[in-house]
Length: 128
Image (spheres, rainbow, N blue to C red):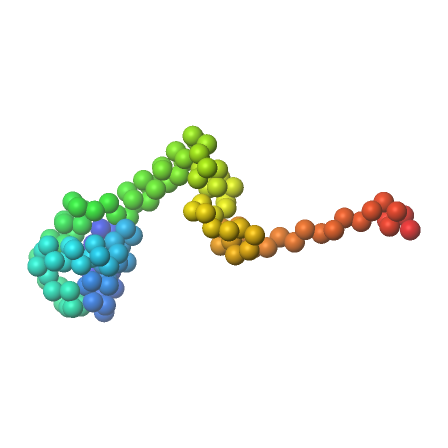
């Protein structure tokens, strides 16, 4: 398995797809990096030479924010929004959808598993 930016990329996949296993690199950035270095997009990751692999790693480090640095930057942005008390920060803090989605139904990913609210019995029913 070739290793780029601290991530083992799958050897059996095409290099364009294999680069997307790095956090922060999608198909477009992958294609751009390969085009800039003159590497064919359709070859497998295991067939790339050591020189091309090191050049690709250096190019990604220099031109893109990836992996730990990107995750740190995103968490800092979220904590900044929470601290200043903006709407998005409040939504992050409450664990609700941030980008305007409805919450009456269909927000299960952000809200978590359903918690059923039981109906309280009245005092008369409890005595009788």
